[in-house]
Length: 268
Image (cartoon, rainbow, N blue to C red; front, side, top):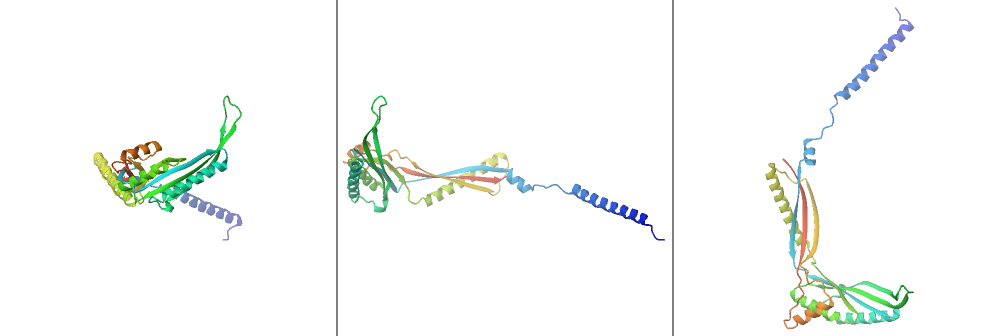
C-alpha cells in the first residue's frame, strides 16, 4: 500500500535526525578517547635531568711580537708651524727606524689631529687663541721577539724618546699564531669539565651519559706585563742600568691563552 506524503516526510526527518546524532556522538566520543600529548622520557630528561659544568684551560707562552705606540706633538702660533715641526720630526723618526729590524708594513699611522689651544685667563674671562697643536700617532711592530730582540726594543724606545716632540704612549705584546695554544687550552678545559662532572655524579649517586650540549668561551689577555708599559722616565733609567751588562731590563713576561668549556651531561 503506497505511503502517504505526510508519513514519508515524517520517516525521512526521523532518519536524518538519527544519522546526525550518531555522527555527533561519534566525534565527541573520539575526542574523549584521544590520548593527551605526552613528552617522551628522553626529552624530559634532556631538559630537566642534566648536569651542567664548566672546565677552564689556561696555557702560557712568551710573546713573539711587540707593538710600540708613539706620538709626535707640537704646539705653535700657527697650524702651519705646528704641522711643519711634526713633519720634520716624522722624517727624522723614519730615518732612524731604518737602523732597526722593522719592516715598512709594520709601521702604521694611527691618528693625525690638529686642534686649537685656548687661554681662558682668570675669573672666567673671554677665551683667546694661544696656539695650535698638531699630533701624529703611529704604531711600530717588532716581530720574532725574544730575549735578544728585547734589547733592540729597549734601544728603539730610548732612541725615539730622545727626539724632541716624541712621546712613548704604550707597549703591548702578542703572539702571532695562537692556534696551537688554543688547542691545548681547549683540550685541558674539556678534560677538567669531564672530571668535574664525574666527581659530582659520584657524589650524587648517579651516572652521566655523553655530552648533550657544548659551548666555548675564549679569552687571551697579557700576563705578567709588569714592565710592558714604557715611559720616557723609566726608559732612561733602564738604559743606564743595562748599559754595562748589555742586557735589557724590559721583561717580556708571558701571555695567557684561556678557554672555558660549558658542558651538559644527561643523568642516567
